[in-house]
Amino acid sequence: MSRCTHDAAQLAAQLAVQLSERNSLTQPPLTRTQGLVSNVEQLVELHGGLVERLAAAAELYSGKRLADAIGSELMRVCPYFALYVPFCSNFVPALGLLDEMRAHRPAIARLLATAEEGIRQVRIAERGDGAPVALLSLLIKPVQRLCQYPLLFRDIASQMGGPPL
Image 1: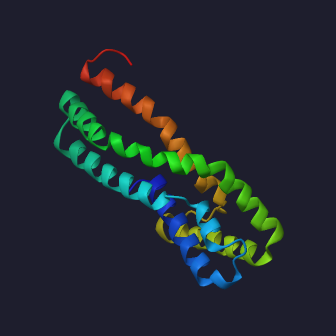
Image 2: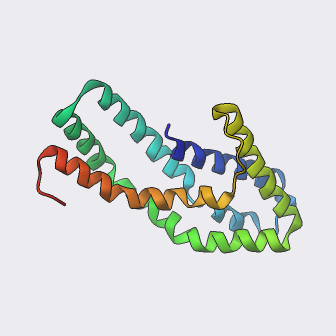
């Protein structure tokens, strides 16, 4: 699993645990706070499988055959890129909600701090990275990833000998 996918999975898991454990404290209601992670679990599933299949192709092929295999795999998952629409549409409102909750709901501010610390502890255990974690830096990752796909498609097309994109 890629670092981006892993971080998104940790974000979803930590917030889900913290929000469900403190559901009685959550104001605004839980359904609104779930908007913080939108459909990130679906994006994690999409990319987890994609990364595994691309890694397997990289072990089997090289050169043009590898580019063909990667291109075929990306064409197979292209329809699922629509999963980014709800996440990206919800991104700005989620940031506003995050700021609002931190400022006006001490219990939720503690909950978010606990989620950030939980992710930091996982990073320490898995990669020795003890840097502080900000939810904003994790929430932006799917948006950033979406912007990288055109570059990837262009690189693959050039390796396949197709017309420039």
